[in-house]
Each structure stands twice: as C-alpha cells, then as structure tokens.
Length: 336
Ligand code: GRG
Image 1 (spheres, rainbow, N blue to C red):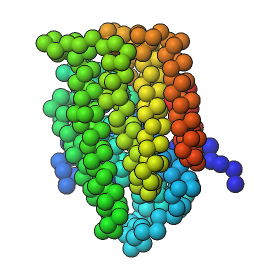
Image 2 (image 1 turned 90 degrees about the vertical axis):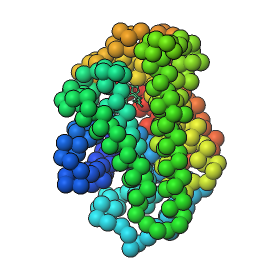
Image 3 (image 1 turned 90 degrees about the horizontal axis):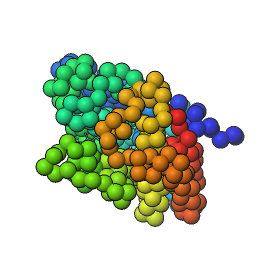
Image 4 (image 1 turned 45 degrees about the horizontal axis):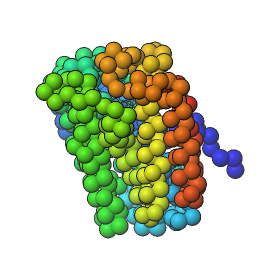
C-alpha cells in the first residue's frame, strides 16, 4: 500500500485533534460560559496544530520502529469511549490513540502561551491566527483567565486521559506530567519568555543583550522545550525505550530550532495575510532574531542544517521515519 502523504496524515490527524479538543475542553455549565467561549475562541482559531502533529507522528514512528511492538497489548478494551472507537475506524494506531490526550494538552498550553504573549504587558499584539487577539475581543482580564484556564486544563487532561487504571499507562501519564510541566515552566517556556522580555528591553532594570549563543539558549527554552516535549510525549506513550526516546528528543531539538529560525525569517519575508499575525514585529521591536544576527541567507542555511541533522538522528537510531522526516522538511520549507 502506498505510504500516506504528509498532507493526508496532517488532515486525518488534525480532524482527530480538533474533535478531541472539543470533547476535552470544559464548557458551560461545568464552567462559566464566558471562559468556555474565550478558551474556544483561541483554541479553534485555525492554528497549524504543529505540536500535536509531532506528538502523533512520533507515536506512530515508534510504533512502526523495530524497538517497540506494533500493538499496545495492555490497552484496556473495556475503556475506549466513542472518540477512540471512531478514531480507530479512521486508521489511528493504538499508540497514536494513547498519545492523543497529550497531543491535545500540549496544544492547550501552546494556545495559553500565545494568548498571554499577545497581551499588552508582553508582546502587545492585536492579530493572531488571522483574527483579533483574545484580549482585543474579551479584554485583558478574561484573556489572562482563559490562558490560566487552558494551562490548568492541560494538566488535568494529562492526568485524566487515557482513562485507565492500567499501571503501565498510569506511570507513563505521570512521566508526561513531569515532562510537560518542566517544558512549560520556569526552566522552559516561561523562563524563555522572561529572557525575551529582558532582551526586548521590557524589564529596564534587568535588560540583557543576546549574542548568538544567548539567542539560541532563549529559543531552546521559549519554543524548543515544548516542541521537544511534544515529540517525547508521543514516543513515551508509544512505549519507546530510553534510547529511542533520546533519539526522538534530539530530532525534535533540531526541528524546534529550525521552526524558530524559519519563524524569524517569515517575520521578515512573510505575507501578513498568510502569516495571520503582524509581520515585521521582531524588527520593529528591535528583538534579537536569526536574520538580524546572521542575515537571511545564513539563517536559511542554518535551518537546512537542522533538517539534515534531524534526519540523520532518525537514521542513526534506526527509527522508521513515518511522517517525522516529512514534518521536519515542512518546518524548513513552509511559507506560513
Ligand atoms: C507567555 C509564558 C508565555 C510564553 C509565550 C511561545 C511564546 C512564549 C510566545 C510566542 C512568540 C512567538 C511568536 C514565537 C515564535 C514561534 C512560535 C511559538 C510561533 C507560534 O507557533 P505556531 O506557528 O502557531 O505553531 P499556530 O498559530 O500555528 O499554533
């Protein structure tokens, strides 16, 4: 059978992620409708779902690789609710189904980070994913609370799903809570965002100037950590051994760096209509970026180096690529 194209995989996986997010997210009367509406405004605003795709593709790749069994024997046949049943009919492997909640949890954290990043106290942006930012529509207070709500929902979801008392799966879920918490917290995304504020001169008493190493270190925390966690969660839920988890982590490290470099390039070159956000903001804010430090050509070649290293990592670890290679390539060649 011909291998599914990346587009086919993305369409299939996105549909499952969107359906699962809709099912998982609290709504009235379990929470006030204004919070439900605000969270959903941002979660369903048309994001690319890059991180959940990485989680699912990593789970699928591990499932296909020799080191892990193709089936997950300990999944509990008494448990699957209707979402899992329908996902299964659409060709999701058991490993991908086990990874789906963590894929969604990470998208919730990513969405919260964008909501807070857009606030006047942070990046002060009025356009995101082609629509007015959440605080423009609902005000700063509700936007802060919607971000807080998504953050908390993510950890509730990681603990809750897949709903099973199977000890091996419960142990993996607990490991994911730690990994995602560290990636999103002060050692990861929050720490990176703090450095970003300092570098942008928004904390005058603690301003810093970043050189190339400093820029890399900021991005490793701010965007890289959550991207790495996305892939690693998929691998762990698919029962990857430690060597394979390590390889997927190194692959995602390069993919995350490429993602950020390309994002910086698009901020200079991108068409605002297809970017869905305000282009040229980095330069306008005199932010340190790859094009600013290295120029556009060298930035492009740095991103291409990341792609080559990511592919080599998979080959060295004898990972059956599945969609992981194509996703890395998409990151480097995407136009928006
Ligand atoms: C507020 C704690 C806190 C953190 C915010 C990630 C972040 C930290 C800010 C986002 C700033 C930014 C635009 C970074 C560039 C890379 C990036 C994360 C782009 C947005 O991610 P995409 O392209 O967005 O996956 P979509 O809309 O497709 O989900």
